[in-house]
Length: 219
Image (cartoon, rainbow, N blue to C red; front, top):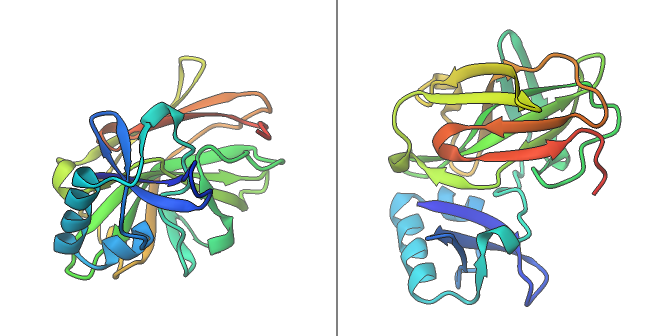
């Protein structure tokens, strides 16, 4: 299953949506996506099937305004090599949100969201850092993919204008990526070299999807 959280054009608020055949299908279940995942695999599958059968609205994926798939209530533990941080919930944003001023590098990988029955779902993750290596923002998304659709170690990479900046692998079975129900944890094996304002960063997270963002963009 592939899920997103988007801004509903009919209601203006955030809504979970099932991603199916290039369309975002608005879920009739008003629970947040993190709560649906936390309820366990069976509840998530039931919600997905209902969204496909009875969507409240249908939006072509490129036209949907994506939010971060989940909005954590607790700090997000993030690990990249020997570095580790706990990112405050207020610093978790969508990949379409503006890159913070002062960003000088990024760490790229994947984040896991935990379910009640030990299941998990995964999404691309990018941590923006300032010149001193301090976290400015953690971007998640746009798609959240359940574990049954991801096979083996996950290749991740970052490019700038077709120049490879870094490549690595996320072991989704790593003990670091074992969140409790509703919790979010991120493992980011790829570190970019210094970035400049105007650089276009393309993040590829394999089966989890990809996104592109301009450093310094405020729109």
